[in-house]
Length: 237
Image (cartoon, rainbow, N blue to C red; front, side, top):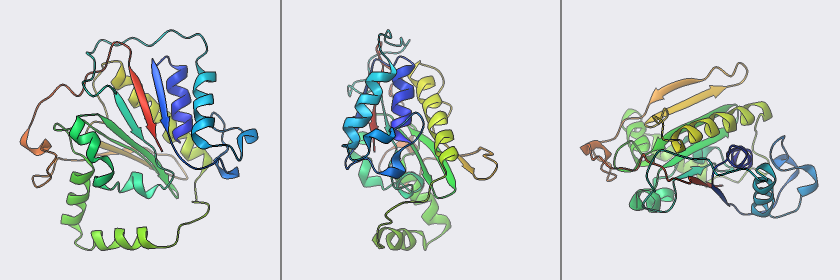
């Protein structure tokens, strides 16, 4: 998902697209618009950066009507290889983004379900901590279930439908471009989900939690929803 989103953003004219990832390209990473077959064995970040360069040769930077983001990044897209980290993201993983006021969007695939969102505008919309707390309020066993899932043996090849992952990447890129262009962030505080077969995308709100330290429930208003005159995004795998 991450490599495809990065190439789409670059091809659409985003001023700078950075890729943060680890490990090496495996055969199951190969996908149209993403890592090619000849990149198997290469570093994943090296392959993704080459994709970004090839996707936007000679394109002028995409313009935006917003103001520069204080943190230096207009948007971070969190697209982890383990779909569980997109479906139930660990709040600690994005503490620095919350502290710096950096907007970030989750996207990924967990088996037969694709998820996009929420788009987190720190201090304004619900974050991963809010998502976790609301789920734990509804199901007290949720924290224990997550701990069991994450403590089990790592799967060598996580199940992932190629068409679904491509759909997730397209929707995530579309929301990211709309945000970077200064439009209304359609997935701020909203999660989109689709499953195979059918790809029937459905949205549901993610509300700020009153006990979450992110402060979104207090109605704090800020300028995190703005983008720079030369917007740029970072992909975090």
